[in-house]
Length: 231
Image (cartoon, rainbow, N blue to C red; front, side, top):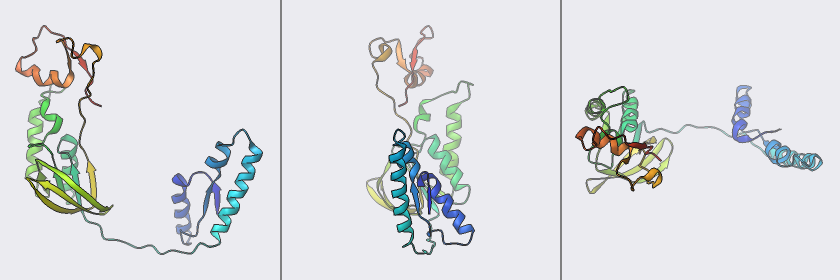
């Protein structure tokens, strides 16, 4: 029995020490006298000590009834569901698929790319659309990646290692099995009335400015105030 700090951070460590010493890791009881005594009753040390004694007494009583438990192994579905086909989702899909695992990449829009489709260059003047085109081509041609556009998850069930999900694809439902879920749904513009946005035509959001600047909608003589767009 250990009387110390939070089991959230240290219980696994103590159990691993038991296992390495040859004892069953579940023959272990822990009571949190740091959070529940010394911290919350710091102005009353006598009462904190009395409470700590009570907690340790209860932990000892519980430890007397502990029994060794056997650990087992469960099969894992070696595939991933990635929700969101933007830059993060496609990068994650390639990283997993290049290791030999199957990937189901789901995008709600009609094409991959997400917010990256609205950008044309970086601060270093790199061609974003050229990079995006190459990335999409790699994803769509990868034999381990299944791409579903105009699609959304209808349901996700199961547990870590063995999920059973249903996708809404082109008006029909497609069941899939996967071991992990990665959510890469991206950010959205945050509505705001600050900085005269919506009141002065010279004030725009950064994302809107990036979309329209290549088309010449904003005159070069303007100096738009760019508002951070992501929430």
